[in-house]
Image (cartoon, rainbow, N blue to C red; front, side):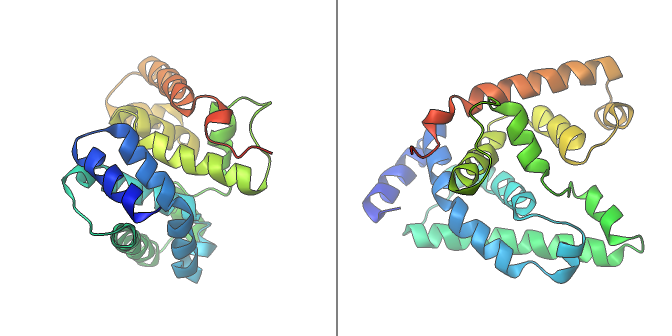
Length: 208
């Protein structure tokens, strides 16, 4: 992101404009993902951790404090995100190493499933519009990572637990303190709102 555009966007972020926060995080996706992929340990890879799992944790942490933060440049902003991501990687690594169970089972506790965010993307975009691979799919995933932050916390939780971790409805109901019927309804509403937030694919996919 050019520095003049970054300064303008940051001013809008500090004014509380969600679209500006959205734009800033989207601009950070590619370099942040590359940095995370480079830093992932063998333990995390064996646990089937994907960079998107770390990005989601990073964006969630950044989303709340971003309007109150100040950065001199886009590179400084990226450095801040990379530090958050590094801390998340350390936490995940320690949790897996400290657990005596098989790392693949422990990985599932972190929401780690190969292709899980791709599966979610397929559910919240049109089957005819969802790109199958390459740069367009990466763009769509970047948008998904950011749009998830715009959901209410309980919507984000139910999507994560049901689709990313693959937990049964009964367990999700216990965690939320709700009935199974209420969880089904919450999940339906969460996916509906996420589909609306994703919008038309033409809004964010590169044109051929």
